[in-house]
Image (cartoon, rainbow, N blue to C red; front, side):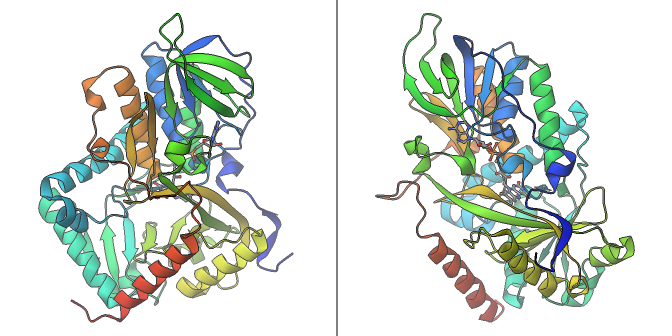
Length: 440
Ligand SMILES: Cc1cc2nc3c(=O)[nH]c(=O)nc-3n(C[C@H](O)[C@H](O)[C@H](O)COP(=O)(O)OP(=O)(O)OC[C@H]3O[C@@H](n4cnc5c(N)ncnc54)[C@H](O)[C@@H]3O)c2cc1C
């Protein structure tokens, strides 16, 4: 085994140590449900919980063990930003649209934290703040322009940090300063998902693990059901169906698959570090993300002295040792003090991008969906799950700025993102080009 790895190395998410996946056979299928939900991540479970508490019978199906998807694999960064910048969105679609979108993002962020607090879900949710580290002087200027625009229009706080002060935040000389957004948060994604699942089960939701949904057809039933749902456990009927499969959306859902760009995200955890060594790396214990399109990101583990980090998105590797080498090189480059530490966990997860870089919520052919989170699915998945449930319940709160506009695809695209390596190279070229440009 590579010398970069600990002897107890696991090719599995670090989060599964505290929140292991469990079997959930679910028992016999009922002849019908009010709502059938495909996917047991944040989107599916938040919808399920809200519906069950409103008295609906709800079945959640996952083709793997519940929580197998990105919801127990992500970095646990809780934010209110998108890949699509606020300033660019405003220039393209106008101030009213951009501020409606960003107000929904703020609501997604705040409502997720409020939900966790109200439910008493113990998942280390904190407003730790975030450092965005600028990879060049030009990126620093771009960042300032974006944050200034958001502060002027939306009142969102930030503080720019010149290069000479970066070490207050991070033991790195790699970056040209950055910005701190003091109120952004983080959580333990595994414990958050487990808490959500426990509450959904307690509310009466039936979760069928290892039960793939293979077909959804329009078929009127006697009790007002509109759909026949075929699963690995047999057939049932449902009045409403929700697709909550994001980066794991199968080709058997062609309309959705055509609109998503699935890609792999990569993460690692270090071995336990001397606490003072870790404290020197990220003295403020914030989450860190760099300003590139091909991002690197870092955070302290919530309850142990380890660093968790990721990057090199969609690099095409699947061998854990090769992934470990690539990620470790990124770690050494940013935090050279950690050059000799070993990695205890390396894992991957499926994300979903979209052609307009925006998450989408809506209803197609009578079937609800929330997906395309572009790396912002912790708050947005929770929020869209809630919104979809409110829509099914006929509540006025169910509207969202994200449902306006088309969910775009490309001609001949069928969900196989053959262009992804080219896109990543294009992003790297764009980052370099911006880095070499003169500061505006
Ligand atoms: C490495 C990584 C880091 C990330 N970091 C962050 C972060 O820091 N902050 C953030 O906000 N977002 C982050 N994300 C994104 C975020 O995790 C996701 O957007 C979010 O978890 C999506 O939740 P979901 O419920 O929609 O889907 P998922 O949690 O992915 O669940 C989808 C489920 O659908 C199931 N499924 C698929 N097809 C079928 C079928 N036919 N029948 C039954 N079940 C099916 C799958 O098995 C899967 O369990 C990250 C993602 C990854 C991979």
